[in-house]
Image (cartoon, rainbow over all chains, first blue to last red; front, side, top):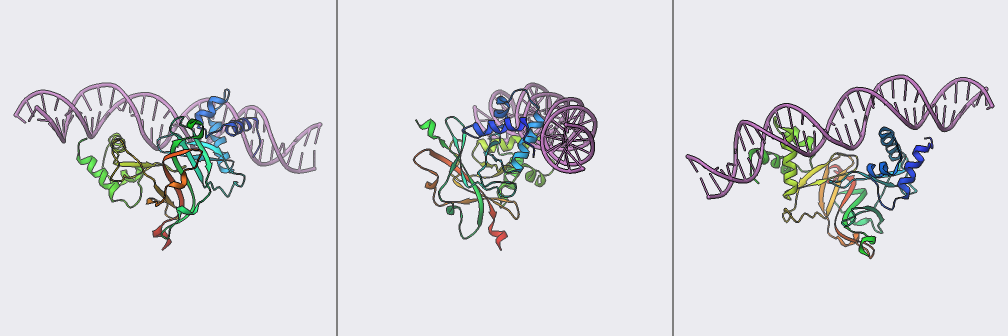
Length: 124
Length: 124
DNA sequence: CATATATTTGCAACTGTGATGCAAATATAA
DNA sequence: TTATATTTGCATCACAGTTGCAAATATATG
């Protein structure tokens, strides 16, 4: 995978955002650009384990940086995706315990929690 | 909201499925039908709190029946959406504790857990 | 450093999902 | 049973995301 100027600027936009970004969010922050290239860039980043997609029913997909240990093969995010009801941003929040999602009936390998509420910034 | 034959058959398909269904799943089980009417029916059911949408990144939206206490206004599903890695079905599973998603920084009003693993049926 | 090979980009055109306006059909209320 | 409200079907549209292909750019090799 080549580190082209276009890819670096897309990565920079995602990295420097405090919350998960939609395709539109990225487009707003890019100068003039090609939509096809952007979609392909996002696809590449997803495949490489550089970013992960967050989908919340009714909303567009959003993207956020992966953990350091993510890569082409391992791609696990057992954290909380919190959507703030006030500002509508989506944040990734680390969770301490993961065992609660298991019981004797099914087996959970990985999961995300999709939540709605109020984020730290909006509470103050 | 009128209980028309079309709506009743869509509802029956969703109700009688053991796992969450996509639009395509519904279409396969309907006879000849109008796509627009189906989309409008799903929208109506969502608004009325009869069904809820489940979105998992990379997959189409799926729909499942709501809890008894859901309605036009209240629409809360604090349960586990478990996607089986073997059969790819998505199941709603009740969770006992909900407090783990809260901490002193943010406030969670409602959430879903999106999980991947192996479902009860596929484990046996 | 120059050249060969692989990767990425831009363009044009396409696909599929879901939405909209409107008139006909059906359901509900009086 | 007639008037009113709701739902349906049709035609058409809007838009997100994809594909094939040729030009441009990046990387590897001698």
